[in-house]
Image 1 (cartoon, rainbow, N blue to C red):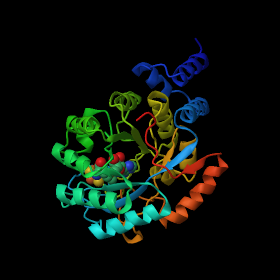
Image 2: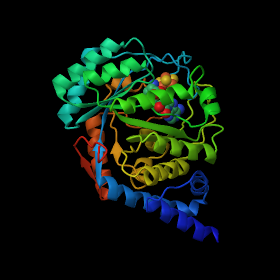
Image 3: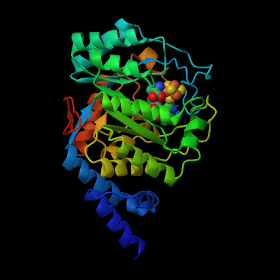
Image 4: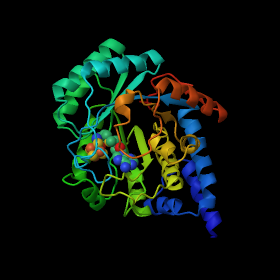
Amino acid sequence: MSISKSAENLIGKAQDGKDLNRKEIIQLLSLPAKYSPELFAAADKVRKEKVGDEIFLRGIIEFSNHCERNCLYCGLRKGNASLSRYRMSEDEIIATAEQIKNTGVPTVVLQSGEDSFYSQDIICRLIERIRKETDLIITLSIGERALNDYNAFQRAGANRYLLKHETASLDLYRYLRPGCEWENRMQCLRRLKELGFETGTGNMVGLPGQTPEILADDLLVMKYLDADMLGIGPFIAHPDTPLAGIGHDDLELTLRVLALARLITRNTNIPATTALATLQPKGRLQALQAGANVVMPDFTPENYKTRYDIYPGRKDVGSAVAIISKLEKDFQSIGRTLQYSVGSRPGK
Ligand code: SAM
Ligand code: SF4
């Protein structure tokens, strides 16, 4: 069979929701660039059918850039001595959550480095106050914690948890996250799922040493975990990390992984990440036309936002309200509308 016939058959099979095996996923990841529009269109159709045309908003607060880990890829790593560190106080976090609420965005994502300064008690108190004072749906993205912390967070009223598996390659994981074990991350993810959190996982695309085989395994992990949300973003090299200068900045491949994630997992919530917009101004809109259905405007106060320096050149600096109104216009241009509702995974 010619490559074009077999590519068309495979894309059609994925669009119809038939299971793809690892070899088929690798084939789709490795197709020549001329097949991308067809793959993206198939993912866009499935997105429309399974999660609709609305784009859901999540307001993010990056409340601490302290981190006890040393991930080779991340500007917040403990070993980055040139970063000016901050921690937001409880009152500052609550005030920012209120701002999110006043904008009409119904969900907040609390994100930070792995910072044990925020003990189980402090995080629980924050969750309780946000629930009581704003009624926002709460997503946590604060890394690996003791399993009983997750229990406590859930009892306190947290609804969702984002913990990207980062890469499905155990060797790459060990190299990129010194002192961390992939199996521990998986255990956290399974526990979060068991506790009833809407659980998000995901990966970075363009990591050094990454192959189509590893990316196919990433997609199979997303499916195996039955994750509800998927964060798929390009790896962007940070100059103050050991991976300085070795980023691939591969927008096309990131969009292809995102499109395949939509085709394979069907009704999940998939953000068009800021990292995509950082690579290229149109990156976010392209993602929304290749399977994505969520955006996460950043409400972190300006004096902290610029110091949440995961990777360089982050877009979305400036007021979140101004950013949302700009996004609204962009989205109308592609026939999509912003949706100020909670946007849980359908069927959940
Ligand atoms: N500390 C928590 C954790 O690691 O899960 C949450 C915060 S961490 C900064 C959020 C995400 O940033 C990670 O899951 C990782 O995928 C992403 N990230 C870190 N460094 C990056 C880089 N150089 N390029 C793109 N994404 C990056
Ligand atoms: Fe810390 Fe998360 Fe960055 Fe790793 S990715 S250094 S855990 S903030």
